[in-house]
Length: 258
View 1: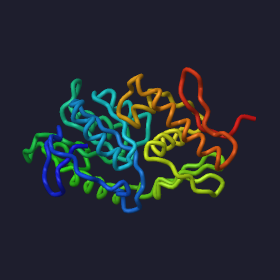
View 2: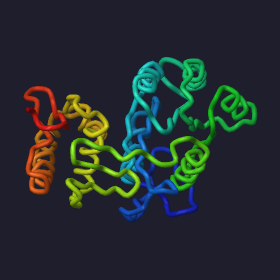
View 3: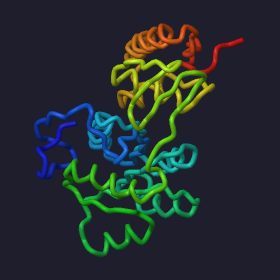
């Protein structure tokens, strides 16, 4: 993500030079990986923000309409939602109120260019947990996310397990049969998505969208290469294949077929 040096603001379209980031940086006090949902009608800005958050090892889903975002928030479990005020079909305020009415208590950060006291009060009274006005500072957004998560019930993620394979979102450690498996950041992101849906087929479009913020068919071959490398590493450690290719659909991680 193109972001400014620390303590300087950036506009939401991020026109500043990229800053070097340490891949070991974690945003939670326990270093855990979180699943976030961004709902924003500004597609270019949302993709820039998603890339920055994925660089910080978040799993990020995107929606560009209020209806699409509300559907994702209803059928999936997210640790935090970043919600834009302006959407093509309804306002972010309406979406926020609808989510709270449905009993969804996921922390919500509102992002908007509206900076009046009345607007801020409206957003918070509708159910938002925090409110940031554009231009935003990326580091400030990360700090706000940390603060919200400290107050939430998701301060430490559960270790994901499939057979003898484990993925610890807190330490980013992958192990099989008690042996550490060294994976790349991309392989880790792919495995995390698959292990959040054990025994279920995860489509190639969903995987490419989660890992590269794109569902372009051109990435399917790239995805296949990464999955092949990941499968090889896991099989060397444990012997029995756990990742299966479902022809024409996607991939599945689960215990070996009997």
